[in-house]
Length: 184
Image 1: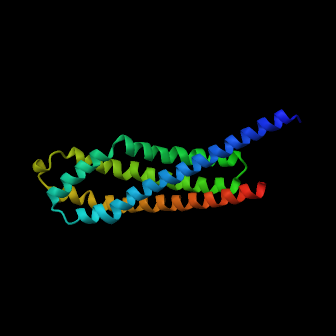
Image 2: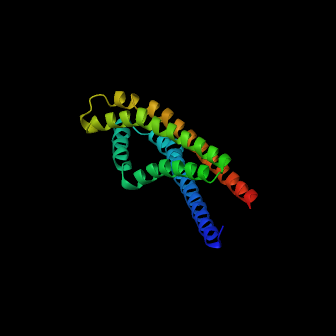
Image 3: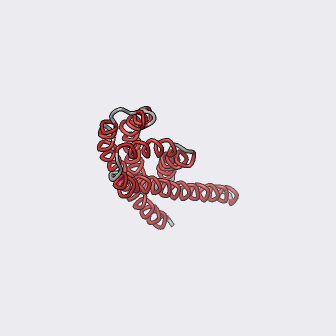
């Protein structure tokens, strides 16, 4: 094999290795941001909102539901999905099978969080927003009761799955470095 072919192959290998690192770190950061986002709702926002009267609770939730749907949130949420999937594929392509498995588990856990969002949070969020102006809702206690407990329980599930996904990505990072060192 000519030295030019070896140089090309080495350059391609270096490029794939860089892409593998970039996608894995991007997955780690975006999943970490999502875990932190959900965690904040569990330990700060919802416990604080539990102290609010029904009208203030409904009004505040309606506002936060609407403002959460913004480009930064969607970029991180979709980025966590895309970067984690890409990281698993690139690691598998590189022959980093153990790292790829950990990343695949992280991806599956994040998909569970997305499914909880789509199956539970989106329908009840939109239903609460669709109730309209809290001053015109005839039974604020019922609107709150039909929302709050289910929302909190489902959010804990999202937090747990994202934290576990983050742990898996950390493990993948550790394994990937070790597997890379063994190949040298």
